[in-house]
Amino acid sequence: MKLKTKILLTCIAYIVIPMVLLLGAFFGIARFLGGITPQLSFEFDQMTSDLLIDLLIAMVLILLLTSLLITRWVHASIYKPVSQLNEAMQKIREGDFTYVLETNQTGEFGELYRNYEDMRMRLKETAEEKNRQEDKNRELITNISHDLKTPITAIKGYAEGILDGVAATPEKTEKYVRTIYNKASDMDKLINELTTYSKVQNDRIPYKFMRINVSDYFADCVEEIGLELEQKNIAFTYINTVAPYTQIIADPEQLKKVINNIISNSIKYIDKPQGKIAIEILDDNDQILIEIADNGRGIPAKDLNKVFERFYRTDASRNSAQGGSGIGLSIVKKIVEDHGGYIWASSKEGISTCMHISFRKHTERY
Image 1: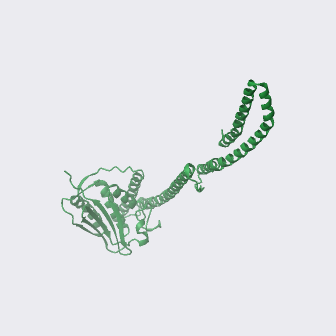
Image 2: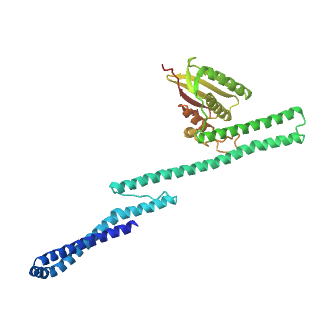
Image 3: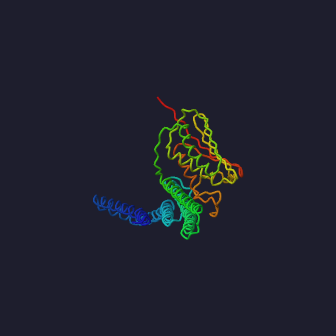
């Protein structure tokens, strides 16, 4: 039964029930008096016949007026708010999150309105975030398609050159093969980055935390990095000022991914004839501070707080030599924060960029 019907029946009951009870009372009194003496019954009938009619008319008018007032009050205070809420919920069902319920009511309906508004705002924010995420995913697909197509085109071109005999000398053949290898390596890195990004999105990074000696770990890490940078003719500097026994709790593999990703990003944006990259490990009370600096082209001040956002690239053009999916530093930020650490960037445009990473030291407890 609809609420409106229930309210109508209730109001009718306000009229009918009192009338039935009143009539029953009069007839009961008349029967009682008639049972005592016929004369008294006759006099009572004579006296009350006109009075009963007038009283019934007055009662009906009073009850009708009362019922009308109660009906209007119930309609305004119950039926109308419920009807508005029903309309609002239909809008939500249709995906329209712009329908606002404004009220000055207090009590249960006021609270219900406010709960609806809170739910509407949350759903609106969720829908907007979903749309933004879908836009970014479409952008990612476009970017990845471009970044995969470029090396594939190069690989095909150099492979055809070898097959057609364009690489007529061993030196030229070696150059073509090395180029093919480098392009395939770029594709492999991109695919690995996407795999990691997928795990980040679903919080499925397989961490294996353990105690790590900072000095020993970074000594091994920078040895690898130094060899890579030497091949790229980039000057490399490493400074470690923490105590030899300093430890942190970290996943060695994921921490290495953080360092390598930052280094790779630095290499992309070095625009000087002599590239420089420096890693410095500093003691900062109960923290260790890792600073990775380069002499690249830097980051504009207005974009500095955006570099860790997914899909952000300092050069939005897909035609730039740097390329990249724009998700590398967002992965770095996620891994660092999962370690309980912090990461931020500082930069001087046209001069240098420095990534700062802070981890809490591990102390033995007895």
